[in-house]
Image (cartoon, rainbow, N blue to C red):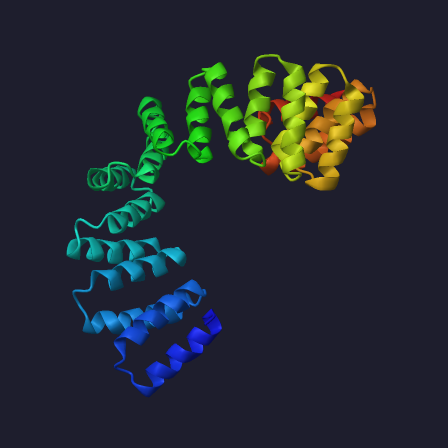
Length: 310
């Protein structure tokens, strides 16, 4: 029986007997799975009004409100579920996720630790703890949590990626490279790993590998404006103006323009000694300052300087 057939059957069961609570419970779960969240909440609330001590009903209400991004309501119901079943790891885990969504980091950390006390090999909780410690800039604890997650699930490329970010932030670039390359081994289409490798190789002045990684980033995600930007900067550093121009042309076609695009085009025009285009592109960069990540004060000063020149 497929979902649509189950939907019709359960609906008929409830219409024939509104007190068929098992069918109503299954119907509520099916509605949630099918994306009819408000309808699912209606049936779950009906059941919760009858079965006031049923922790699973409150837990599923929490899931529904979380799907709607109503995190305060989700938190309320997860708390009720945990009160009724304080040793249910899944309930505590979702409660922790909800605290995290509400930016209540200390509370989220506390709850993830409770999950680990109950389920010491829960790699997901170690991963989430790592993310929370990283947000709090406690990089050493973050590293330990990501490493523990990897020890429990070596193929978790997200954990490898975030561990690499820890090394990157601590400027342990060789360790970061090793982990980012592990990410690519496990998930060859994960464009952020290529981009971060491109950043590191650029910083190490290994321009050959930087070009390879940034081109791979663009191959995997043609909308990544930051990759085009960095690759253009790299070619400008190498005095390869034509390649820099080609990168910006591709960015315009594939990802669209922004303040950074106009500024880099201004720099290319300046190097080509096309002062008319240089001035026009600078003007566009200033006009699009909300998407300009280069130093705005410096760009504005450059624009004023060329306008004041005779």
